Length: 283
Image (tube, rainbow, N blue to C red; front, side, top):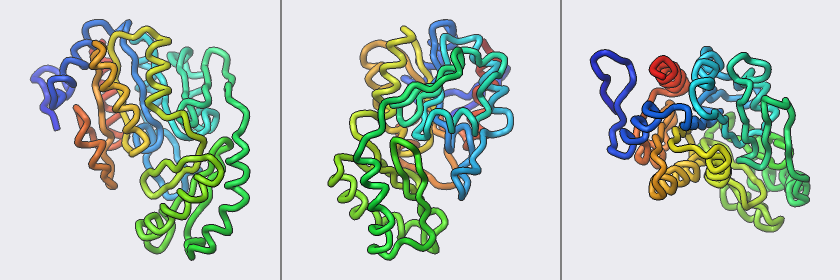
């Protein structure tokens, strides 16, 4: 989606709003912000989430771009500290002011201080964690599923199951009921169901951060259902007069809702890294 101009390698967004967003970033980069999801966007999706690492060249591209714009943030459902480790973001020249908004914005890591600020854990998460093995066993979905401890959330992955999609579908209702009993919500993703406290999502986090940075243009890149609130936030910013560019990192497992709403579709983390590098070269 999108063509290339003759003398550059920057792709052309498919929508007028996207083109306006890119033009605004190019016109005044010092007041533009770049926000990027981690898994599936900066890092390839892998069977074991603990093995996820930033795509080769991702840190270099971010470090080249960050000094030329107002601010760069990684916005992720992972704990902020985990994303920093897996991304290799700490102590990188050029990323001295990087922010990682973890747990959908409930946590924040600032490169300036190298510290994570986070709220107290929700008691509902501990209760869900205790009951989860029994629920998985009762549904017959224990074999092949994997529980990821995320501190202030817990996630169930079905990617390793014999039939990953069937296991995912079978677990949606039982996990929604479990979450509801303890005041949590379920955030579905690609073959993963995350149980977490309500009230924070990537859209809320993004709007707060854009206001903090006083940005006049934004680029947001994501790949999964959890990125839809961030897309909605960019749409709201556009309505309020802040141009924005929505990028979809398209992998082997498609998320049609995201792709359809994107201004620009690139091929997975490799495409995201190429876009960031091209943008840095232009600014």
